[in-house]
Length: 195
Image 1 (spheres, rainbow, N blue to C red):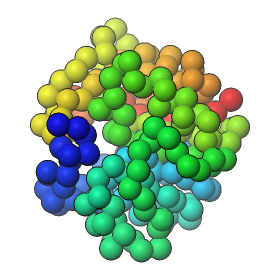
Image 2 (image 1 turned 30 degrees about the vertical axis):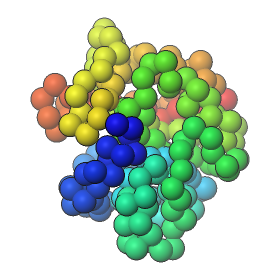
Image 3 (image 1 turned 30 degrees about the horizontal axis):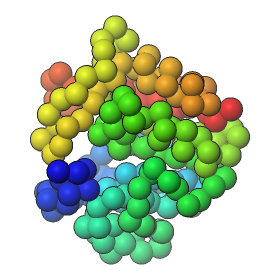
Image 4 (image 1 turned 90 degrees about the vertical axis):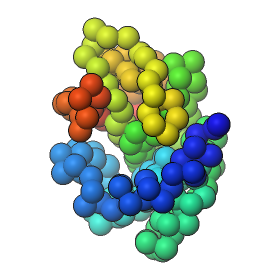
């Protein structure tokens, strides 16, 4: 089963659990808000909750997700935001100020992620900011697949993700690591500038 179908099958549950900015950890909102402004892509936007948050801060947001049910919900919730069904693999925009990829890279294997990061770099202005959130481990652990309930996901050592970002043309500017909401699933966020 592909990612779009897997999330489509649980879209109502996902929306009920994560569908508003109020359901997001305040530390995550602060990290995102600290780094993103201007014209921003929210890639893998889900039901649009973080797009709504960024819009409340004054950003000009476009939300993109593979799951039509998420985009339908987002359009009803925030009709003033441009929401589109689409993939982060080939983006039909360019020269954006920021990209948010909040837990949307977790379903990309180590063999797939470099091409996606290169696409992110292609559409960002020089000096633009990419913010990624993912399941992370301390730098000593290896990239590993795990059962995410919806579909297979990957956990990344923060240092390995930072190295992949650097190879794709980014330089790290900020990093947040903490234990996640569930034991054994540490949270990592990295903000990186396009060079």
